[in-house]
Amino acid sequence: MGDPFGPELLVESRGAVRVVTLNRPEALNATNEALHTALIEVWHHLAADPEARAVVLTGAGRAFSAGGDLQHFVDLWDDRAARRREIDDAGRLVAEMLDFPLPIVAAVNGPAVGLGCSLACCSDIVLIAESAYIADPHVGVGLTAADGGAPAWPLLMGMLRAKEYLLTGERIPAD
Image 1 (cartoon, rainbow, N blue to C red):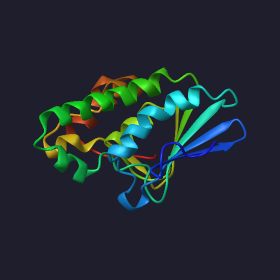
Image 2: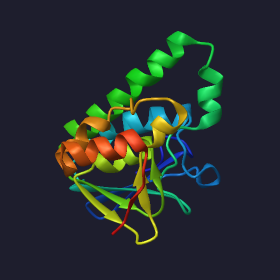
Image 3: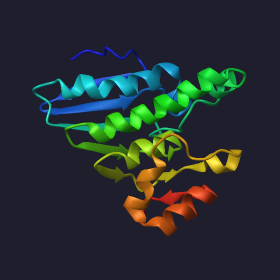
């Protein structure tokens, strides 16, 4: 199938399964602009693949995804319009995943934090390694969970538990 999404996002065919790998292991698969854009675009590409029957989403190295790349956020600090586009794009990413016609299996091989947590929560099935965890710690840096995945939390665990995790940033272990 090739890698039309650059080195940050790999797409591999394994029979009828497409394996999508976040490939920035040196940055714990944190999403920079290139990876974020690729994550939005990959779902249309895969939906148009007549041989695909399911997608496995995973991370290279020891993390599923550390969320957004902090340097990328620093670069956006003084550009309000760019920050708005980034937030809108995060919502588009979640919408693309939720509208995707095939099952998405998140193979969470390590920490899934922030946007990484949203990627897992928007998947149809989540398989999580014993040493992995998911968390949305936006609140720890004075932000709300604005990447679009937060609305899925109450559907997965109930409103009170979702509020607890989103308002404290507490980690959810694999068990």
